[in-house]
Each structure stands twice: as C-alpha cells, then as structure tokens.
Amino acid sequence: MRISIQPESGIPGSVQLFNLLCFGIACGQFPPGCRLPSTRQLAMQTGLHRNTIHKVYHQLEAMGLVETRAASGIYVSGTARQAVNRSRGLSKNLDRSKQALEQVRQGIDQLQQQGFSLEQVRDLLLAEIDWRLRCSAQVLVCVPRRDLGTGQLMAQQIQQTLGIRVQLVLLEDLAAVLDQIHSGTVVTLHYFLSAVEAIAQPRGARVLPVEVSDYAREIALIRQLPSHACLGLVSISTALLEVAEVIVQSLRADLLVLTAVISDTERVGSLIRRAHTLICDEASYSTLRALVRQARSDLIRTPNLVCASPHIGEAAMAKLQQELGGIP
Image (cartoon, rainbow, N blue to C red; front, side):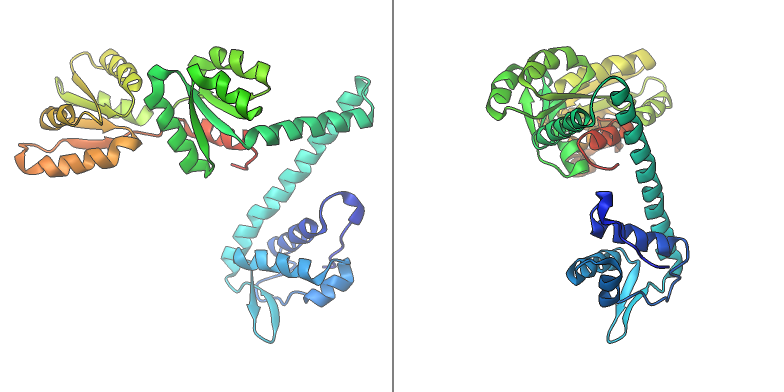
C-alpha cells in the first residue's frame, strides 16, 4: 500500500496519514507483524516532516495498534485481534467522516441555491462554528433557587461524565452572570426553558435543554415492593424529593413514602430505622451508605439501599456532549 498525502485537501497531513495507516491495518493491508515504513521513508513518500510522522506513530502505539522494536523498526501489533478490532472502529469513523463531508456539501449546495455566494456561505459557517466554540468554553447549569439541589446534581453529573468545568447559576442571577462573561452555553431542564431563553438569548448565549432520566429501573423496583412497605427517598434536592414522592404515590398508593434531605441527619436516621428500601441520588449515596453501616447494629432489619440513575438521561447526556463539541 503506497501512502499518498493530498496537500490541497484542507485536511492536515498528519490526520490524513493517521487515517490511512489505521485503514491499512483495519483492512489487512498491514497485517499483524508487518513492518511499517520508517519515518524517513514516509517523509520521502508524503513530504511530511519526520517529527510529524513520529508523532503519528506515537499515537498509533499509544492505542496499541503498533509496537516499536529496538534497532528494528515499527511493526503492526502482534495482538492481531485487538489491533484489527480497534482499527475497524477507526475505519468506521473514517466512513462517518466521509458521510459528514457529503452532508456539508449538500448544505452548501442548498445555500447556494438560495442565492448565497461561496464567500457568504463560508462566513456563515465560520461565524456559527466560532459562536459555538466560544459558548462551549463557558458552560453554565441554570435552575431556579427552589431547585438548587437539582442543579447541583446536574452540574456534578456533567463535570464527571464530560470532564469539563461547569458553573451552577441560579435563574435569579443568570442575567448578571451573562452580562459579565458575554457568551456561554446555558444547560437547563425543559421545565425552565422559556424563562432561561428569555434571559440568555438577548445576551448572545446558547441554551441547551436536557431531558431527565425516565427512572425505569427505579419504577420497576417500586412496583415489586411488598404491600404496605415503607419506602425511603433521600436526596440533596428538596424539589426532586417532592416530585418523586408524588410519582411513587401515584404508582403505589399502599406504600408509606418517607423523604429526607441528606443533610438532615436526624430524619435520615429515622428513615434508616423504618424503611424496607432506601432510594437515593448519586450525591447522597456514599453518605447514606456510611450512615446505614453505622446504624446496622441497632437495626432489626437492614434496609435495601439503591443508588438511583443519574438525573440527566443517558441519551440526553450523549447529545449534550455532541452539542458541546465532543464525540459521544
């Protein structure tokens, strides 16, 4: 397989080389154990600097696709099955990139049919991309003051799942915060979308509503509880507890439902002594588990402890990651 780089394509040469090598490994043109061209050979073939080629090989090695053998060269990894399976995933990404390019071309064609010149289309695309990047640099989670606990759950989940910094802002303070930062992405729940948009959009901020989990696993568990059992609900969010209590009572009117904010240690202790099952949010789980262990010697029966699903649904989180510029 001869590796050829297209300098006029607009795609960086290092990216082209990386994709070509991955594809060659995936399709078997570079089988496990095959010696790959040296950095000097590839530099002569592609016109790329040897340092650039070395960095590409280092990426492949970090992924386990190739291995360096002292005084011998670079070879396709001997763990053939793992290497090929991983690189097949990369070749699928390459196919997806081709599909995306076709969609971009179709979008450009449609804009030109509406009378836009290529220069105008370019300016529109660059302006939109620049705006999204600027907004994504500052991510805010916004809820009303009464739902502060829910906002804390959302902010923690986004930070842990996406690995980005998130600022929790109350709806009552949103205008002042946006006036200071000038651009940003505001994440909120559908319940508060209209109120958030009314403040954020005139200030050039992007608003992304997210859907909460359907809590299907928890609902199934509640349906299976014994008749007239006591169910304890624990959270950092008072508002979330109020909603959860209503939902549980609509599902099982026979259950005794008790709720407690995790910071109310005395009331949590009462739930531990009385409840058949305890359901709590992720933010409360470690504290509640420790309290249950601490009280175990005084309990006739240890309650079942269940950590609820993350508040933002899995599909909604994946979409949020994509909207913020990541690849789910």
